[in-house]
Amino acid sequence: MTRIVILGGGPGGYEAALVAASLGASVTVVDSDGIGGACVLTDCVPSKALIATSETMTNLALAPGLGIRPHGPGVTADTSSPAVAWGMPSGSDSGTPALTPPEVVGVDPVQVYERVRELAKAQSLDIERRLEREKVEIVHATGRLVGPHAIEASNGETFVGDAVLVATGAAPRILSSAQPDGERILTWRHLYDLKEIPEHLVVVGSGVTGAEFASAYRALGAEVTLVSSRDRVLPGEDLDAARVIEDVFVRRGIEVLNRSRASSVRRIGDGVIVELSDGRTVAGSHALMAVGSVPRTRDLGLTDVGVRLGPGGHVGVDRMSRTSVPGVYAAGDCTGVLPLASVAAMQGRIAMWHALGEAVSPLRLGTVSSNIFTEPEIATVGMSQVMKDAGAVAAEVTTVPLSRNPRAKMMGIQDGFVKLFCRPGSGSVLGGVVVAPRASELILSVSLAVENGLTVDQIAHTFSIYPSLSGSITEAARVLRPRDFFAGFDKPS
Ligand SMILES: Cc1cc2nc3c(=O)[nH]c(=O)nc-3n(C[C@H](O)[C@H](O)[C@H](O)COP(=O)(O)OP(=O)(O)OC[C@H]3O[C@@H](n4cnc5c(N)ncnc54)[C@H](O)[C@@H]3O)c2cc1C
Image (cartoon, rainbow, N blue to C red; front, side):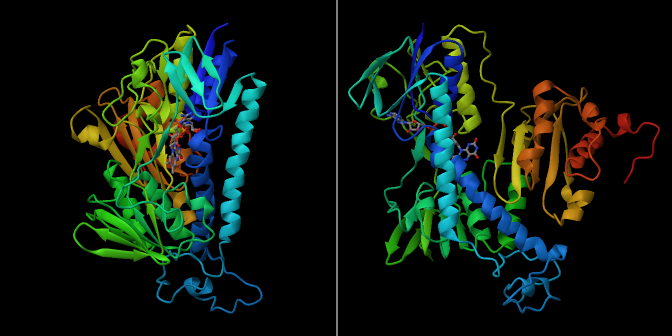
């Protein structure tokens, strides 16, 4: 029987363990912080559970625009005014849906955080039980490589495998001038131990993590300042999508400080002072440092056994998840390939299929779909606008705003769009961007098209539900193929 030893029980590690066990290998997972990894315990799962609450608050804030009024004991507001009906500050009722959090509905922070923690713990336990059912040996300990195929655990045991997988993940990047104290200066891993919704949260970093928490905490009632060193929020993402999100942020009362680099964060009593490199300061009750992650590859004995690391400390891997040492594989955030749970899991599976002699294709990143869980969400797959603008791939593109989608109108959705890229001539779908509530659910049809080489004609001929947000995807496909699809017909407006 082949022996596999896995260091790290996050998606990269546990998905690999399940594949290896199903192929008949004897598998040991050595994990220090909990099965499910940072993904389940501190990062992905808790943030999305928190966002489920903030999303509900956003819907409540928008409810007056749909004619919903609170009533009951103690509510005496003027119901002719949507914003006032929700106890909103005067001036927010301008005929458009109110965009500040409702004050007659309160968030119970203790319950919110407890739910998030419990959900994460339960999911970790579920995965652990599943691994046990598949006869995977789980060792709760810190491990390090003491030979190319040997892992020594902090409980004193050494596990030797025919192949080893390193899947130790990443940790929040800490700036020496902004040391987290877990109370006022925070990383995202501290948030769920708070007792309160911060009165004024200063989010440092406007990448995916910073944007998601800025969006969520604003909806939960915090005053939010977003400090971005770049020209705009979400640098690196689709520019049109980032513009929509920045617009929404500003309308919802988030103060966005672009081209503002934080040079230090200090705690002053019960608050924080964020100093910007141009000398300005921002005062808040809490600061959330969202300035990226670093791979957890130090002190693992990797270089001692010959595993090559990149300049940032990531484990170098090829598309089969092989490192520079035969029989040593790596997967997930420690490789720096693409920091997504789905990619970590796929890298781990590929490693095991390869190690155990199965037929396997190399990792393909061109078809990975990803989502930013702001409100609205941004989902993307395949080719990007940057690739098109750089001329890297010839493509046609169209953008259909949601404001002309009938379902969006019925739901009071004003922001968002569907963008599709296709190959000129053949019309093969190359990629897409969806900015919408639950874009994460809408992108699948575009992902299926990209993965399977479907054409815009095929999407244009597919029935979408009327009325539905996904109707904008078929509409975008029709726009890209107007002559073929509407030959002989008048094009509907
Ligand atoms: C705030 C936030 C939100 C995110 N949301 C999403 C999302 O919505 N969707 C998405 O796809 N991705 C999301 N991600 C990214 C996702 O969490 C990571 O890509 C994913 O966790 C990577 O999985 P992994 O297995 O590489 O590492 P991890 O999940 O970090 O697991 C690594 C495991 O290795 C263990 N370990 C480390 N060192 C050792 C050692 N020496 N000995 C033993 N064990 C060790 C750790 O205890 C941990 O359990 C988010 C990230 C952040 C920061």
